[in-house]
Image (cartoon, rainbow, N blue to C red; front, side, top):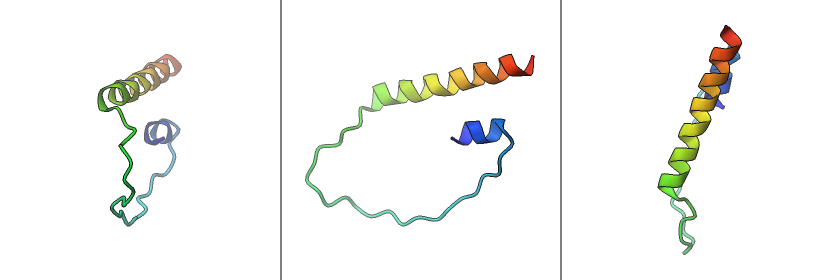
Length: 55
C-alpha cells in the first residue's frame, strides 16, 4: 500500500496504535522466509510496472 500510494502521489499519514501481547495459546501462522520472498517479489513487480509506465 505504501509503495502504491507513493507511486500515485497520495498523502501518507501515520496513525498511532496500541499494540498488546497476544494472550492466545496458538502457534504463529507466519512463515518468515516464504512470506519475505513473497513481499520482495511484490515490491519488485511494482517497481517494474512503474518503470514501464514512466517510459
